[in-house]
Length: 88
View (cartoon, rainbow, N blue to C red):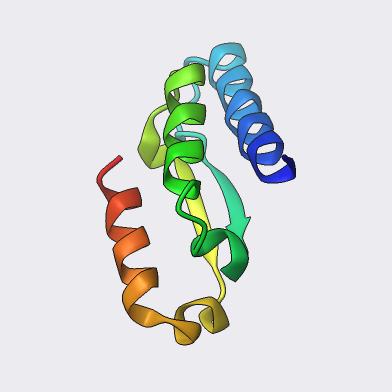
């Protein structure tokens, strides 16, 4: 699916940058925007965890961006998902 592909590509790209410039003074990071649909999809945490594992990137270098309306829809479900992501 597109969400898996995008997250995988983002992590792969980040891995390539860190390998090409290992002595960079500023750490690299990449941001991926997650829609409310993906935020409430039970698979999103697994998809992100697998992309991190497959590429070997530092989990803190993958920034997840979520718009405010996604959290407003169901703040408890959003909170649960965000806590799982934070645990990666």
